[in-house]
Length: 225
Image (cartoon, rainbow, N blue to C red; front, side, top):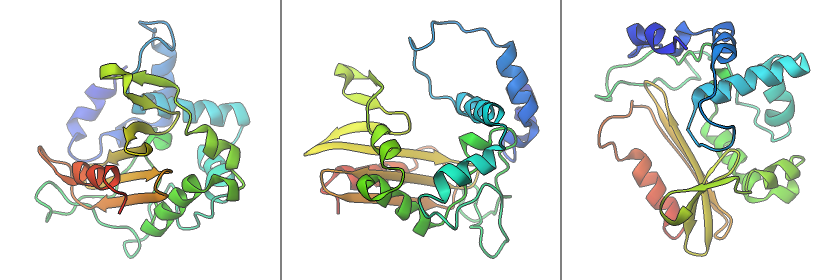
């Protein structure tokens, strides 16, 4: 694929914006697998982006409409969207110095891999549904994403579900995921054994030795308070 040659000139600003949807699909169609499907694990924004386009093509429905119909509305995430809002509602990200503002993130053809914009309240509402799936219209899906689909690491202690990293903790597993753009960071996680969840957000770009994710992880892995 030609993602890096196109993205590198804008690596510190909007690398994904230079790679529209059709180019993502074309790159996938040209790719040749190096290993048997299911035999290797790689964290892949590209893979999730392709999955989003595949679902949209299979259903004849834009990805934005699919996620709104099947996820956002059923979970009551009324302030979550895939497009930028107004300056009054969107949090402004910053560079590594924490002071210089950055432009809003443009996911280009990678919408399914990171275009969702949500409020702290909606993030907690999302986690509440995962903690108490039986009360949700998406109960079956919420239960399904707790099930490990692969194991890796020393002694295979670290497992992955379809959507979460799953690590062992005192009393039971903890589920979490983190992510970042060029101006913001986020960490979401929950622990069924303690009935607690954590949503942490930061309006500064990741930097070497950044304590944000490690601190959020430690809070969740501790006593759940």
